[in-house]
Structure formats: structure tokens, C-alpha cells
Length: 335
Image (cartoon, rainbow, N blue to C red):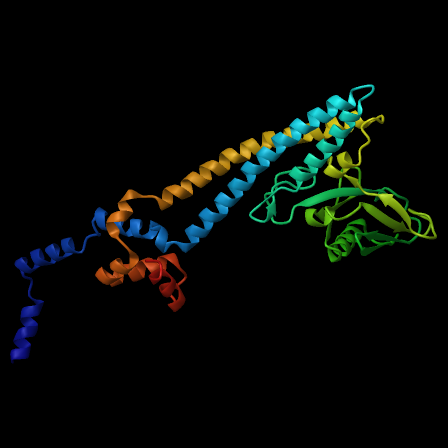
């Protein structure tokens, strides 16, 4: 009977009980803004964001390298102007001849300038922003604008690597191009076609610096003559340091080559100035995430973990793909 009575009383509507239910709903509201702000500040703490530390480091390394690249380009432009002034003279003295060698030596020095173990400009004086910058060049006579009446195999010996290209007359042109790209990739080279259907080959800058630019070519009488391989000089798509270092200033055609490199350096410096503005904004944004005065009141991570273990573990979970033993140990060692 008591159980029945309890059941009946539970099913009765109690006006006072309704009010209690409403009050209980009010108690389950969202967390105050101060608590949410506190959680966000804990997430932004530099000591709890090793990924942010790495991002800040990489960003500032790149920014520093680009800043030094700007200094290199300004110095190179100044030296090229001096070289052009001497080249414009009808005759120059032995002192001016020595100055030519000094200028070339300075250009070589600045082209080999490094920061954090990496070059700041490549062999074409372009500021390096990627891990493996490429220097592109063409080989005289190597293109797709040829008759396809017979098969031919062209062998290229580039920087101690052999690249064999089989021009099959019945094969589709796009298929041949993909096969050729694969053959060049085996030799750590890249291939593309320009608007004149010439083969544009890309070589890593580190390999280009130690290469003499000689390409040995042999064919079967179609694109290239039969017999022993012939040596041809690779033609870079942009003015490079090698062109100036081998340049005879007193010969005809020297001034246009100097002006071509000077024009490229000026264009690269203008483009670099725009990139630096963007990088500076990005770097300042990252620093802003790391230097919040409000973070000082939260103390170290160890203290937060002791005061509020649940909130600290949630912060770890959001900052990593699931808390692991190694992640927690690394965070505890911070302070």
C-alpha cells in the first residue's frame, strides 16, 4: 500500500514542483564569460603550445632569411652598377681591371651567403622560400617541334646522370611527355614545356652550383647527329651568376648581359619588398598570440594542473590529438 501511495503522489502535479524545475534549469546555464576567457587564455599560453613555438621559430627564421636576401640584392645591384660603368669605358687601366675581378669576387661571396645553414638567394639571385629551389634551363635543339616520321632515342648526360628519351612516332604526344617527365625525375630533375614547346629542365640549386653546365647529347640522326656524344652548353632561363663570373667585360655583348642581371635583381627586390610586408604581419600576429599580459595571472602549467586537473586535461586534449604520456611529460618539464 505504501508503494502504491508513493506512485500516486509522484504522478500528481505539484505547482511548487514546477517552479523548482524551472529554477533547476536556470542553474544549468552556460559558463560565465570569465571562465571561457580563462580557458582560452590557457590555450594561448606559449608554454602549453609547442606547435605555436615551432611555428613562431619557422616564421622568424624565414623572415630573417628574406631580410638578409634583401641586403644581398641591394649589394649585388650596387656592384653590378659599378661593373657596368667600367664596361662602358673604351679602355680601362690595370687598376680598373683589378676592380673587375674584385667585383666578381664580391658577387660570388654574396651569392653564397647563408643563414641558419641555408642559402638566402639561389644561383639566379632569387630569394629562397622553398626547401629545394630549382634553376631552369633549356638544351639547344631539344623540343617537340620536330617531324615524327621515324622513331629515335636521344640520350642526355646531365650532371653525371643519363636520361634516355624515346621519341616513338606512333605514341600520343601527351603520353610521351609524361614518360619523359618520369625519366627526368629518375635523374632528380623536373621537366615542363614552355610556350615555344622547348624542354625546360629544372635542377636543384645545390646541384647547379657544382655543375659546369655541360650537357652531352647523342642521337640517331634525327634531332641530333649520330656518332660520339656532342657537348652543348645549357642555357639558363634567367641570368645567373655563372654568366657574370665568366663574362669578359671588354667584349661586345657584355653590357646587355650585365643590364639583364641588374634588371632581374631590381625586379626580385621589388617582389621581395611585398613579400616582407606580408611576412611581417604574419610574424607580428604569431607574437601577439604568445605575449598576452593576462597569461601571467594563471601561473605555470603545473600550478594549473594542481588547482584544476579537469580543466587542465581538457586543455591538453584540445592542444593535442588526445593526451599521451609523452605530451604530458613535455608540458610538465616546461616549468
